[in-house]
Image (cartoon, rainbow, N blue to C red):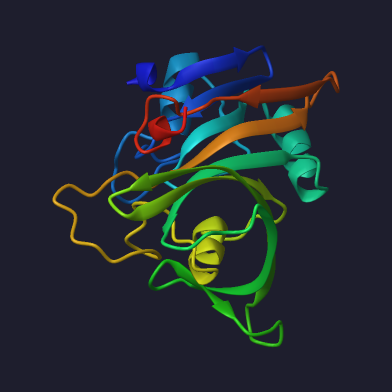
Length: 224
């Protein structure tokens, strides 16, 4: 199963992988093979989960191979030292701005495992969510405009990108939870990909950046 996790970089402290779509990043109630457990079995030891990607989302992740590296990477996330950039394909019949900043307040519904946009910070559990996007390309598909967005995630809220884009009228292709309610013969993959990750090495302090483009994955392959 570890062949599903493409190794992008590894040393004695960290391991950077491409997590495939549909593979959990950690063990969940489904019991499906997950990235952290697969890496732990591969390495025969400790694997620390530093950050998360939703199960339907693929892309670049870093895991720690010891507790010191895990603590220092986690501190970088808290202090804003992590740089996370995503690609998303959104579907709309409208022309969209070349760039935009989306700022909303989100509330998570634990029972439904969903988040929603609310009108202000006064509501219990509301957290500010901020992202910025740039339009990278557009492609027409059966009279629906598909747009490839490059998204800079500033905060890290539950389902943030999916919720904010849907609220802005830019639902992500294949997102039947927040997006267009279509009856797919075969539901497509969620077109959201964590393609770039930047951080400082937790031990030697060297600046690192990793990219992984979904060139062979639909519908991203329409743009590359």
